[in-house]
Length: 526
Image (cartoon, rainbow, N blue to C red; front, side):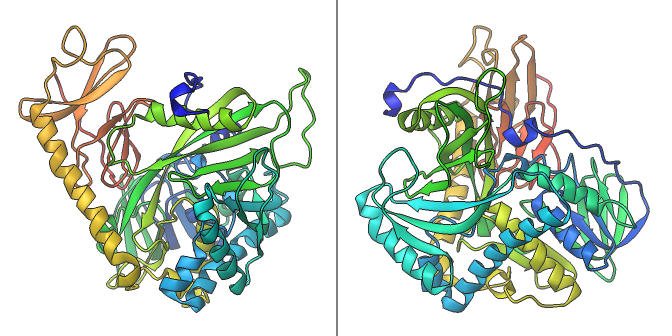
């Protein structure tokens, strides 16, 4: 089915399956005056994985989350636990060498084993199940790339094979299959991990936004509620708000979209990714051998289908259209009965496609970072927790070299560094030209956006983000992102203001949803 003939999408509320099927947390906010061994800023999979590793090593830990834990990026994932990250290993071997490519592979494989071990140790009911992962060629032209990937992965000791058939209900031209990968429910898993962390001189704090870090011996983390003193600090905020090493120029955001759909029949076993541009992703939930029908005779198994990954700075396609294209793909390949959930996620990709895990910059000896997971954060975030805990407690880790944030990889990154930053610069300048030409007379009978719509306008020489709710009330905020001054854009499907340059997101009335911005968009009076 082509995009042009796709039906109008069903529109469930933009709610993540993982958030909809788990309770809301209620940890206390931080109160001023606390000394711990390690402060971990960020309550997603990277922060909580690091914290549990450190606590098991005998360190006292404080996790500081600006809102509620496991609700931001980790709560909006596809939730695949896999070392198969598209077609990456042939490139890693070519650009980093076989030794460091093997470090990358081993770290991600170990992350799957670690999650499985904790599921068993803490008796966590999180729908964990080993399964196969496939990356399949979207066309015959990509088959040779798939074969090269299989060869590289096998040399690195990964459980890879070349196949021409998969459990999908449609033919593929060829695929790389990884055995013994896994899928799970990330919030069910991490809620239990948070419970294990909190207590016995370690803490999980919510509604505690970190504003500044002072490196030293000890370090100090300044929050809106007071100061935490710690020997070491881990910045696990998806994008590091403490950025003296230019992470804003070394990795770039991309957004992807997911649907959880009910189909006629059982969803195919396994997890899937393809080589299309943009790529598609598929997996089933729950990952049980069989799902019994409920009282109405419907199976509780859902199929997660998505993709449409794109850079936020690219114009031309509204968020609602991205969801429509995901639905068109799902209906073209499966007998979709209903769409139960839809959600989107922001990820960051380093210019050399390898995450940054280690010391955050050369001058901050006791401050560490885990970021840039390029859409594979369930395994990479878990691996980051293992690596960072080792670096803090032992001073070394066998996989750390390939992820070192201070690495110099001109062959792998120079061209993309220039391309991506040129796009950001172009967006910065172009948006200002557009805002100079904007006027409030372009839409709506009274000069404001139509109900349910928002856009950037210019009034009294200031770019404003103006949203009109369904009741006709207008909300105006500064359209200038406080992170680095780019102009935000309206997300029509999720009704948020999104920064195209570095991925910060804000509610329609300007509150920060996700960073790197730590301040909201200022309210403006029309």
